[in-house]
Image (cartoon, rainbow, N blue to C red; front, side, top):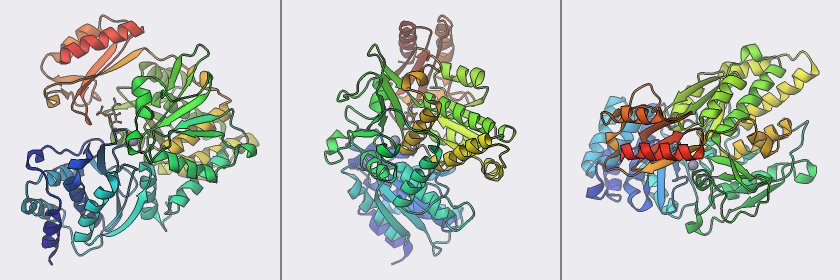
Length: 541
Ligand code: NG1
Ligand code: ZN
């Protein structure tokens, strides 16, 4: 059978319902929707993964099947590029084109157009590795993916169930194996070993305080965290004292239900099942363990969230401090990347108190990640808890070749080197971020309350507004989505209202993942933030 015939024949097993043609869009998080309409999309993403691998001389491409924090009946699929980063933005449109082809013949046509455009040799090797989260629909979607990889004669490795960041890690490991940039051993075990060794090194001169409760959203993070803990020192040996909760992956309907990072961040409250007492350090992962937020109840029993902005400020201050202490200050510029959703107080704190540079990008980690790579050390987190730290090749070189001038410099340098291994530099990783935060809190001797005290958040409100057509809402290029270009006049109306509030700031933008417009507002008091958000939502409606 010819290549075309094989692609077409397998495609016939995964047809797209006519009413959905034209509706698919590879967005910030790949394709994400009700799992039952995803079969043809996953098949076609498989085709693109194999084309991309062939285009990149047989480098390995990753495919992750997950819908992260979405409800259990959803699923999604996204591609991972060779260095473990998100699919190159220019290729997203090809994913969209393939997904929207309205017949098997049309699909083969779009496929062959890409082969021509990129001068792809279909006889050259293609390599793909893939994994999925714990959703019930995952195994069926894996079959759709496998059909594409078989039809295109792609070499595959099925890593079965993994967290999203573990797959990103593996993709980078495979593609750097045997080079001087080798990222780690190409196995799930290699991932745990790398993190555990780095954690032990970073904690050499310190010990964690108290215990940590980890809510795993009843997703893949639960079993993977339990596995990771086996590689870490036990509490008796000065290791972490971790209590794992919401780690039931056998009841599919419990995934992200009344728990998890998104529930906690959006609702600004702990999971109702939480048994934590005042001051207890808690954190929540999302459904595929690429997001994490921390929280605790203060002495007045008020819920206190330590979100992505807090993790970014904590990490940036600690890394800048280590750079200074190890004598590397002149060689390492530490910068922070945020989105418009970052609390204004965190932005001020980073600039004024930490004296670090800040860049603001559009929503979506691919934008943040990209901007972060322009710093020697780029710290990026979305307020929702997705983020990481990236070290540039020259920063890594400076760190690894630096000769400390005193024992104090040597200690700081050892910790800094450990962080470069502890942090998953491919993508935000809840497990790696969890360990990072624990290391920093231990070094600083901080409780959650002390972490919270570093600055005071401006009261804020995020509202989701259902509109007839979110595509009518476009933003002005270069403003990191902080100003609307259309509908005409809307931006002026927003600005008029914002001007009436002390410390007021508000913006509206179309969501990239949901059929809605999001309105964010902050002001000097809670009531004013609520009023401002409501007023701007009224303009958008
Ligand atoms: P959208 O729906 O485009 O606002 C949301 C989150 C992003 C990002 C993506 C992908 C907010 C306000 N937006 O994007 O931060 O994480 O989902 O998951 O939280
Ligand atoms: Zn996620």
